[in-house]
Length: 142
Image (cartoon, rainbow, N blue to C red):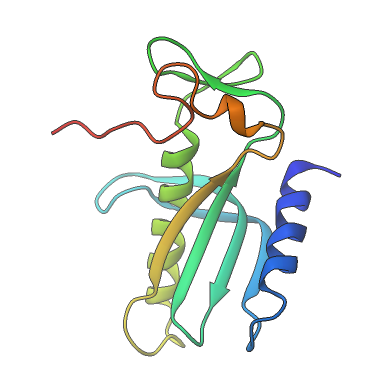
C-alpha cells in the first residue's frame, strides 16, 4: 500500500467513532498562491480531513521511505532533495484550501480553521530526534 493510502486508512480508523464523521480525501490537487499576493501555483495535499460541522480542516503531507535532514537543515526523501520542507508543504496546502473554501459562494459562516501535520509512516520513532534538528519543523527566523 502506498504511504498516502496507508495514512488515509489510519486516519479513517482513528476518526471512525466520531459522529458526524469528518470527510477524508486523498491526493487533493489545488491551485492558488502560497501566500496572499504571491503568484499562484499547483500543489497537492496528500490527505485532507474536513469537518464542516465543526468548521476545520487538516492538511497532511505524507513522505514515504527514508526521510531526513542534512547538517544544513535541508530535507531529503531518500536521495531526493526537497525544495520545501514537508511542514511548509502541509502548511501551504492548509492555507490554500481554507482560502478556497472561504471564497466558495455556498460557504456560510466564519473562516474554516486550517491546521496542518506531517506523516512519515516509514520512519521509526528513534530516528525522529536525530540529525540537524531532527525531523521536526524548521524554526522560523525572527
